[in-house]
Image 1: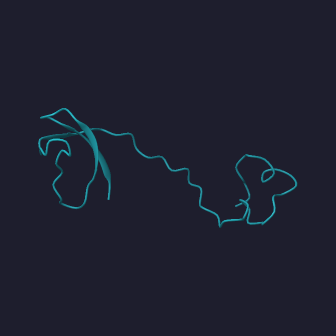
Image 2: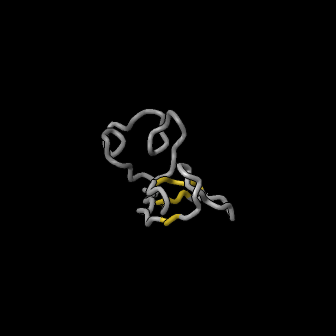
Image 3: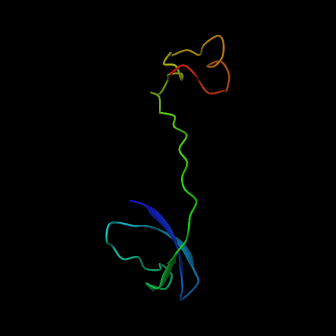
Length: 78
């Protein structure tokens, strides 16, 4: 379910709404359905996948002696 940003034409309030399929959106401040949908910046995903808790980026339980796992840089061992 996407989250959209709106501005109410009646009270000028700006708010975000979680839009469920076909459900009408109303202003939470005044109840009006006279809204403008705002253009929002897209979400950019990094492409990284989550790793199990307690594991390093390359799957070992201990950090590697040499980079990339020994520093703060991204792991290239995929």
